[in-house]
Image 1 (cartoon, helix red, strand yellow):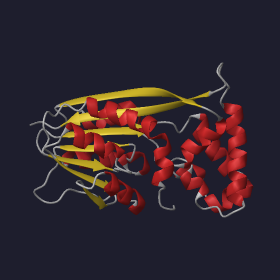
Image 2 (cartoon, one colour):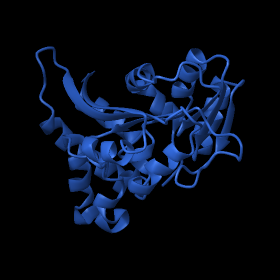
Image 3 (tube, helix red, strand yellow):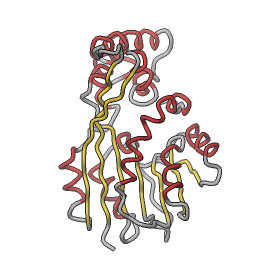
Image 4 (cartoon, one colour):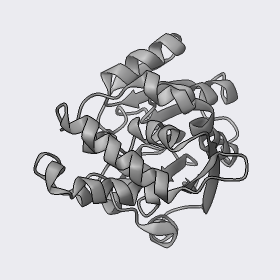
Length: 260
C-alpha cells in the first residue's frame, strides 16, 4: 500500500477527532507520566494527549513517514518515531502509563495476541485505550469489496476481504481483557456525519478504508474504479430533506486499566 496522505486525511479532521476526544474523556488515569499514541497519524490525537497531560512524556508512533512528518510539523515539541504496531514494544524500563490507540488497530491482525500483549506492556495501574472503526458492513465498505471483486479490478487488488482486520466484537474484547484488568469499559457508538454529497463520502474514505483498493490500480483503472464506486454510493445513501447525506459510522471503544 502506498504511503498515507496527511492532507487528505485532515480534510475531515474535526469528524475524525471527535471519537478521539470521547475515548480520552473516559481514560481513568489521573496523571500518566509516560503516554504512547500508537498509530498517531498526523498528530491530531497526539495533540489531545499533550493538552490533557502537559507534564507527561508523550510519544507518537506510526508506520507512515508522511504522517510522522506532518505530526512533527504540528507538534515539534513531541517525540515521534516510525514503528510497526504489530511489533512495537516499549523500551526496557519505560512501561507506559497510557497506551492510546485511536483508529489504528483495525489495520493490524492477530488481535487475540496483540491486545493482551499491549495490555501486559503497561506499567502497574496503566490504561489501554482503543477506538476502532466498526464499519465493514456499512454500505461504504461493502461496496468497496463489491467493486473490487469485479473482474475489471480484481486481478490487481486481490482478495477484497483480506484488506482489513475483522474485529472481535464488544464481547470478544471484553473476554480478552476482563480477566486481566482491574476495570474495563467497552461501548459502541454510531456517529451520523452530515455529508454534502456522495462525492464527499468517497473523499472521506479515500484517505482511509479505500486506500488498499485503489493503491494497486494504475490509471485509468483507478479513475474507473472510483467512478463505479461513487455511482454505487450515490444510490446507497439517500438524499435528506436539506439535500445532504447522512454517513453512519459505527465505532468500537475499549478502556482497560491494569491493577496497580
